[in-house]
Length: 271
Ligand code: PXL
Image (cartoon, rainbow, N blue to C red; front, side, top):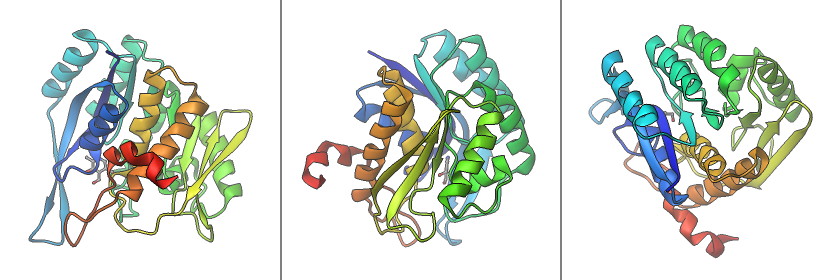
């Protein structure tokens, strides 16, 4: 069995965070583990307002010992870290256990917000984790924060941001334009490896129910790497995976709806 880990927050609503990661790992036929950095909850009595409860440092460290020392993984991703010690522990364990297949999803926002949750933390993510990442997977907002190219509204600006983020140490930069790049008729993402750019396109899926799409797509990239794919092949497969997941989108309530990673099993019905 191929083993993989996510270091991420728990989304109590189940669509994003480590829940999305584990569902995705399962679809790739992998054995997934999770180091929980925080618990995110949403208030049904107050417009689904988010609250974040960090897991304390000792408990996070003990989880990472269990996963990395006690079991071992061939790939890992990190998602919402939430605290400076979660960033430092992620760095320490990825380094100490020589995790080459490390995917850094530099989560700075939850869907619908365009204000960084925690600016000081973003600097730590940039300095401590970007240099360890085989692939980093910012969305347009996060790529803007990491590169200073903000807002990013064109493919040229995506390329400029990718170059800057690459120069900060990530071996590959995958910017998820998705449905957010203005004036496009496709969902466009960009991969940069320091030499060339690859644009990945998929049909635009018109829905607001995209909660967890970023988590799912970076988990799928890590899962592809765990299965031995090249970075390009892992990213291209992940793009198909997230597109299928979004075809299966649904509402949880009036505020939020996720994709459905298990929709992958029906891929041939849609292509
Ligand atoms: O989609 C970003 C995200 C990541 N991780 C957790 C979340 C969210 C957004 O809600 O709750 C735990």
